[in-house]
Length: 172
Image (cartoon, rainbow, N blue to C red; front, top):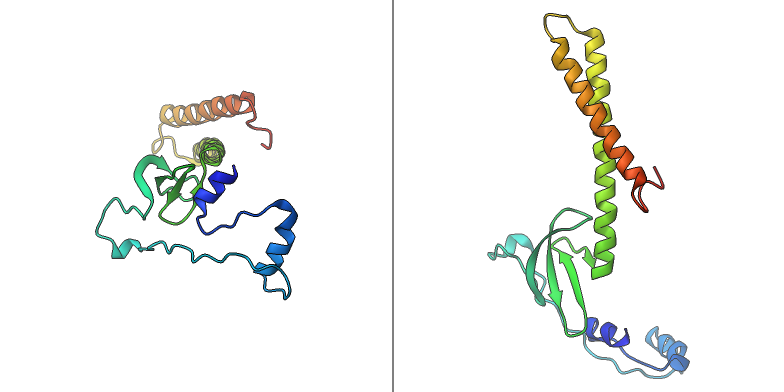
């Protein structure tokens, strides 16, 4: 892990744990504490989307676009492969390691499924409401009942599956 951290942050400083407090204090500018080796950090060339003509819009260090969407904003994720670490970043700046991306994607998928349940239940409720207030000529009962049944059944199916899935539905 320390090697991966150093690979991901080239301007980082590695020191023994016993000197950590002293070095951090020195970094903060406290007098009389140890000097620490200051390295100039590499400047990443930041390019905004409107300035780039490359439709892939890869930043320095990113090796390619993926078919994955950012779980935070839905933007495309680029993969950056360094010697000891791989990470994923969207053009907005959300950044994930492989495990954190997997967890965030699972959480986003669950949130979307619960939103689908709510939308289906609202569809069924609205169809019931409209059925109660509709003229028989304007809104055929078979179509109305079909919409109610479809939305209610699908919502119940998704809800049941979500509640039975491991680690899902605990908060709902």
